[in-house]
Length: 262
Image 1 (cartoon, helix red, strand yellow):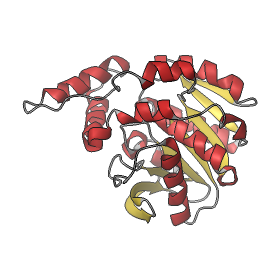
Image 2 (cartoon, rainbow, N blue to C red):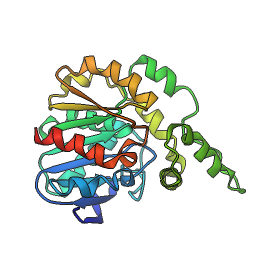
Image 3 (cartoon, rainbow, N blue to C red):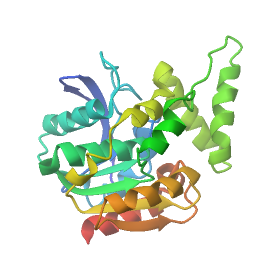
Image 4 (tube, rainbow, N blue to C red):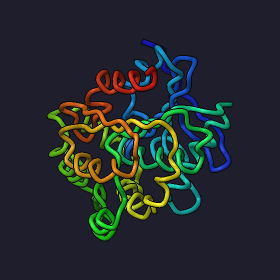
């Protein structure tokens, strides 16, 4: 598999941590919150065999710098485009998982000339129902920090029911949640504030929607989203749960590759 290199790239909003592999057609990978590029750690070298795979830490997460202002999907999308600018990339295919899929949607809507193909894995559909469910209750992944360290157990316990029985995957989640700090639960409320419905008609790129079959969030949201993306292709990722890209990296990469090369 292609060798992965990691670096820090300066953009107007701050410094972005990025992992890259391969050469040729650019593919930008956007993670869910409060994760980091590590969600695609095993996907990047596979895609790097055929493409220029680029996995970034969303600003405020992982090892990227913290933004000065409030978090918004529009900000996160704009920073991702500024990373492409800094890398000298005019046009890329964009892949997003969970929160990353919402960021990818905004990139495709707000910067259509920059998006070759769009791949949305476990995307949200932010309508009034979504806002009621996720906008007015304590955010998922938000725990009170305690000197005895039991907040680490709380973080683990929140995610464990939605993860495979994998210590490695849960440890990687906890590490990223700790790096995110006060932002750990904020991604979900940031998504819930996004005005998605007027943006969807602006998405013109050929679109693939990946539905991890064991992700209860994705299965419901995908059904609501698809009518708003006419022409989008739907594929299932059998057995996929909330951490689908790092749970099933080879299968995930195969779906992405098949769509990009079609």
